[in-house]
Length: 140
Picture (cartoon, rainbow, N blue to C red):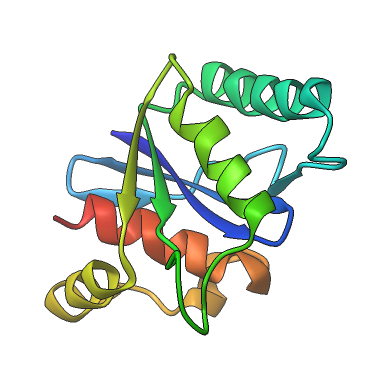
């Protein structure tokens, strides 16, 4: 199964592509590590963002998007632009989308520890949360 872990930070979606097949985790190369939503107040920009993600899903045959859920209230609450990004992703019709809470993420990592140190993956440091999100989803 091929999934894409997504962390929404500010006005961009940070991505990490991961595949689980025959008991092995694989990190396929991906042309984009993040997709930004610029000028979120213009509907054509939101459509452009959604099109870019839809195209990525089609090109890489992604079966599932897993988004790290952000709180709606409180000190660590997500911003309005982030929730627009989340909605645009959830409305994609060419793949399934799930939200994974921080609590679920920690429980899965505790239950199924990472088989490799993150630094050994070759991913960029800013992709770590997206990586963990994808791993936690696949490790179930």
